Image 1 (spheres, protein in one colour):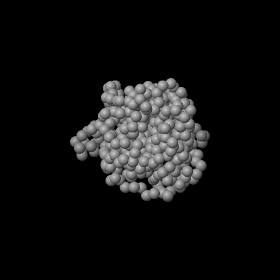
Image 2 (cartoon, protein in one colour; image 1 turned 90 degrees about the vertical axis):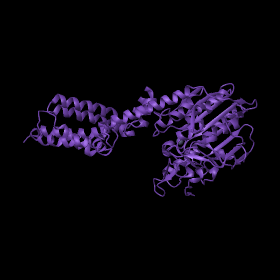
Image 3 (spheres, helix red, strand yellow; image 1 turned 60 degrees about the vertical axis):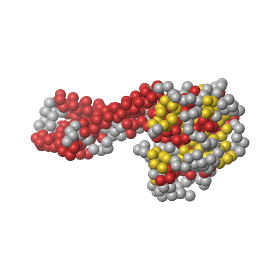
Image 4 (cartoon, protein in one colour; image 1 turned 180 degrees about the vertical axis):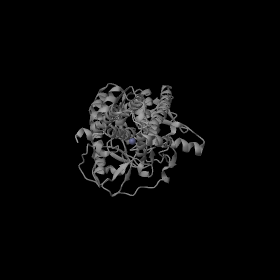
Length: 512
Ligand SMILES: [Zn+2]
């Protein structure tokens, strides 16, 4: 018997169909979807017409081929993925596609190749068993809508969890949400601001506000951490606030409630601190190492886009999985500082965002409990070093300046005691909100500590009091730069946006 006799065309056809069904169903980011793959395979065998069969397979294959690299990297088309599409330009998309690993592209190409094999091998077949079983396939694909119809009297074919249908439905819903959000922010941004400011003559010429990322202050030596990672903050004349908390547990929740005026339970997107400084006679710049996109980040980057000048620096996409050191912003900071006249510069760092080892490119000087946690400690040290460089540049360019550094939120330690011990976003403990706040100005000569409670909801008055702007709508009557207790009942936002008293949260067990 020759080799040729061993290759059974029907067997090859069945095999190609199996491979395609499996790859096709996995391409949309919903995991392996084994049952759906089996039922897709059965259904594929029932086609008689080669044209109908080939058209259906190729349409599906092209969609799966295009989405597969994204699906395998980021999962199904959710709000995050759709926002990236909405806020990413062509150059960024190209960089993003190039950042996806080769094997994901190979899987993607395999989908096309297996689909083509299916079409080429297709002959007039008549499988009886699949014809009978295909009824089961239909039932399986639409089991979710059938269940919903039975339980809730609500039937929509789009509720199917069959990956291609679910993909279309998820993409449609996420797109609708993103468009609505975008329209809402943009509408609000276009509204004129209501700031009514009275700026003193003796205020600082240059203002720098550095927004740190995911820094929990008990991981900083300035706040008692055993590894020395904040030598700049500890040795520089300035004020260390020992009880400042963020308003939220994640970037967007926190920064939208700190950078914009929050009044009567509403964020006023037209009234940002950026615009207030602009109105107060400062030329404003926003320099960010975080992406413009990310569902989450969009209202934050919109605050940046209210500046006279803005730069979003990043490596590839604003993809959080790529190494993009914060030092890349320094030349832009230098340019902004060289500008004549009054200026306010906002710097938004990538800082210590999980995964910490991506932030430090896997490097750390001191081991602390686990690799990832060591990188976290190192990332804070890197931010401290960056602050010292900005501080040095300030001194060279101006003799009248103020600089503030705070972080958007803390994190929680997970997998304690395991080699994968690491920090991740959470809203469970007070520590998830305990962040650093450090202020230094050209007139400060010594280090000072303010132990009175302060909150991210008061970030705007913290900035205006630092700069010397009086704004009547800012109803903080006390001196935030003293130990005066301005308000005792501080609240924080939970992940879902509800407000709870900070004191109702427990403290996380200390690691040292
Ligand atoms: Zn953050």
